[in-house]
Length: 341
Image (tube, rainbow, N blue to C red):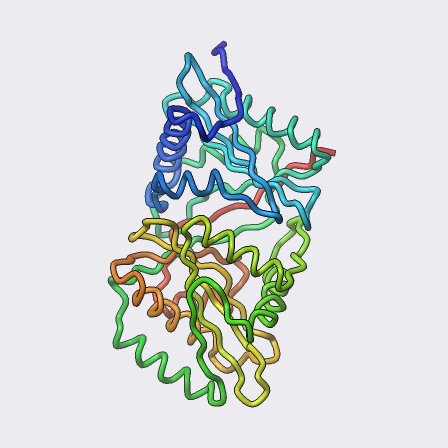
């Protein structure tokens, strides 16, 4: 039996931080080879960010003084106080030695001590037409008592390969359905005259999107929470690039999308929210938001290549928009829960 030492990751211990990052990167390359790589700057930022809405807890597993396992816990502090979402990675050359089980046992102990009753993890799965994935996480999770509650597809848009002429035509056609709306774009802090509307739309995202059987409570987003998110992002060096559409006659913000660029990343950025108010659907606003915001990204990060997004597999409306503007499916992600009660 391998002697496994489980400890909390100390951000002031550079060897442990490097070991955790290397472990995570090797594990992800083994399980999802084309998943976006995480830079050291991004890893440090994610490890040290503070928020009123959640806290982070990170664990490492060592064998003979070497980091061979890593777990990151995302712990909600406002809604979803029954829940801990986590990631768990083990170096490929140290798998099937009890390291993942030891880390999960510590996660469960921590969750119970914090009165959390549900664990949530996302595991990759192969889709038709894409390379076969090893499914290591699925086999492990099944043995540990996790059950599938929902599933999403990860897609990526390669901004260097999109057909700009075709997108110009699609955008022009979409605008003919959106007369009476105006474009608003910004970086990082949202304008004061739209932030209240953004909070309203943000609070609708979970209730408007297919969630399967996930035991998940929609956030009660307000202006203060939006401003805190923006402030946290600035402190962390994150660039948040946003586009909204406003109905000129009523002044209503009808739709909103944003993309997050991690510090120093010129290769991949992350699609955040995209939502259109139900009262304003049917005007191709989602398509306009996507295309205009991709181009907004390129004005600030002209070398950016990929935008990565996830959609519930049942969300045909958003999937159709994403496919039309250049996103292509990479793999499925299964949302798995374990009940600790």
